[in-house]
Length: 397
Image 1 (cartoon, one colour):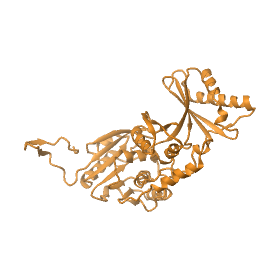
Image 2 (image 1 turned 30 degrees about the vertical axis):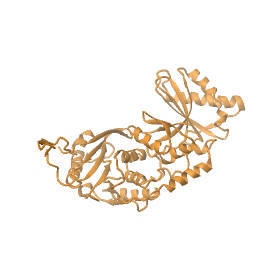
Image 3 (image 1 turned 60 degrees about the vertical axis):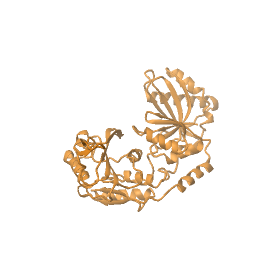
Image 4 (image 1 turned 180 degrees about the vertical axis):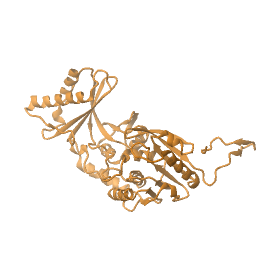
């Protein structure tokens, strides 16, 4: 089968590596998506194990079209009774980039009409539409070149809904984005991981799932592929059993801190639901008094942007973050995501890497800051010939 895994901006390469690890072949990186090939086992593993996929589509057919009547006719040529039973419900998700057919909702309506009309003409009755929880979800994508691609959604509910986050603080981060941030950080599970502003605990939970090689969607009770006519229940049980057998121990610490008591309580509850009870240390503590948990580690944080969450003096707050990192966290690397460019500058450290990400509807930057172990390295050093030179890679201003 040709499969397409949808993802978020800048997570495509990370997702491609994940797909290769589960046995995907002929992998191609697209915009906010990765295409690949695989059998049923790869399809099931993709839904269960991919951390940075939003949904997995099964490519069905494609054709070129510029007119609504032509689209209707091409959809009518497909024998939908092979894929949708009378007892099923279905829904159409449409996205268009075409200048000729530029209304997604209208396209979805035309496809729905064609399917319904075919059933009525052949059987005198039709399956119902259910936009919330259909047994069959059909994806239509019409690109700039007017190529219409029809796929079946094998995921159903988006894959970021892992099933562990029953409660959350205001402005929670998406689980797929959180997992992507963990993977983009380059953390190799060889040191402590800290989120100093953990909110509902999503980032440390995703870090812990990754550290222990736990399938992120092991708590999900249903996927759309379980309702497909070719669903293999025995193979699905095998995939789940093999994933459970790959879970490992983790010898370092994962910590989530927050200034809010309620956030800590929510984080602990969510970690318990994720099967990580007692595996993450959550503690009420402000970043102003935070101390390193080890000599080296990786820190990932999602501080307030002064957009949905208000901080009285956002500039001073980000300056405090930078001061803490410089003064106490030598030997650590810290990653900060924010949509507030001015505030990020006040961290007072030179970013060694910058990645553009989208958090909800907010365009953000994900910055990496590396702190030297011990005191700041000398600005002047000698080269191999004994000549004095000025360091050009100082990360401090």
